[in-house]
Image (cartoon, rainbow, N blue to C red; front, side, top):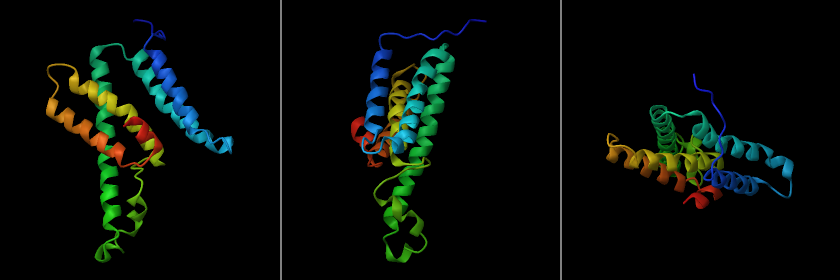
Length: 168
């Protein structure tokens, strides 16, 4: 068995800078204690980078992790797009009673997450991995990977989050 060791390389500096920038963007300076859940969710989401970079050493496991991340983000993105469509349809008179619960999704889409900000942060992590999946290997289906990355980017743009504007 090979011993797992935490390694910190020069490109990890950019990940740490991104973590610090997103954490600073999430702090409400008028009432900092109310922003602690957002700050902690930022840190947890961005620590996924160090988990992948330091624990997943083999190429096969790295590809499996990338596929799992992009496929789960794809499903969450599809749910978010459906929420937006149902939210827009809730304004139609014939459908307004049946779709009244979706009226809140006309402006922001949280998908299966607690808020649209957390969903946008998750997509900001998943989109680069989708691009890695798109451009890595000869056996990767390019059209499928491109479609998944396109759906992730579309879902990021409809979250109407400040993180989406940073990510785009």
